Image 1: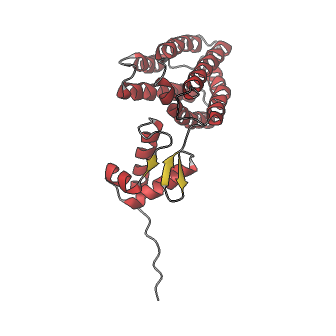
Image 2: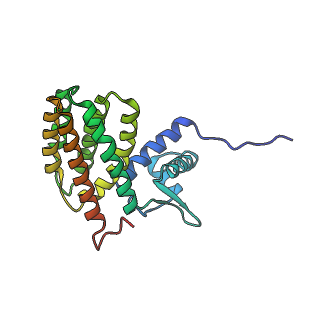
Length: 227
């Protein structure tokens, strides 16, 4: 008598599903608290149910979705604790990355990324918001890479994924992109001049201001995206 083992979906299809669903969640196209149907996601992404199910299990490990008895899956809510933890770690790690990157900066690269952040953003327009957030993450990842500490850069990269979802929710209520662009200019100048302490201080101010924006937006009386 032969034993039939469950067939695992090809890794490439699972990775494709993970990447697509993570993107939809982080950009808030799939909103916090939204119920997810494996059948609907399979149709939406043109993938089989097996890679969708495997992808949802992976995203549950990342804390982006939750399994709910008799309901399937829901997109995880953003909690006040999540906001404080994510931005608290960003304050610690990105300030140190800025300090380490001072004097090592490829100013031309960061200026190009900064220009992308400031160009074409239209408050209230979903696509330009997502483009801005992608460029903003690329700016911070590039700076983290310049720190010379690969492990530090990887941790910052992961934190930026989490905070991108929070920023997307916050920007629905308040446009802080102009302030962020100004902070980028000041940061680039401090880094180019090798002013490590000033660069770290500017980074702290930027991250703290973004945290305040997110907290204000998500704790508003009519907000249903944070608990």
